[in-house]
Image 1 (spheres, rainbow, N blue to C red):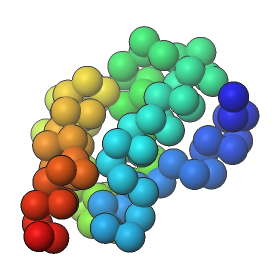
Image 2 (image 1 turned 180 degrees about the vertical axis):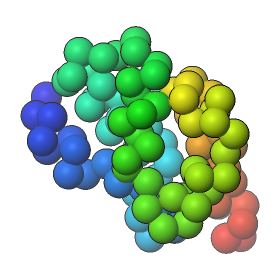
Image 3 (image 1 turned 135 degrees about the horizontal axis):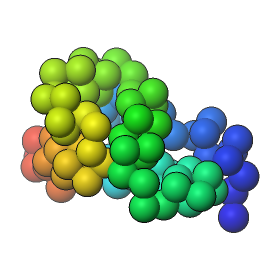
Length: 93
């Protein structure tokens, strides 16, 4: 199991094709929540993940409705809808 510091260092998402995938980002965020004892705390996870966006993904996040920004389940769904690996594969083809 990773330490919280290790997971923290690796979980930044910019939405670019050369960065980590959306799916890996979600897994890393879940690991951080688990390590912090916050696995089921959707508000805490949403607040935490808000600090992990950069570049185009930061601009995308800031454009979301505040209700989505505050709810990890809604934010995760929006993240997958915007950046899912299958979507990027079809764009690159």
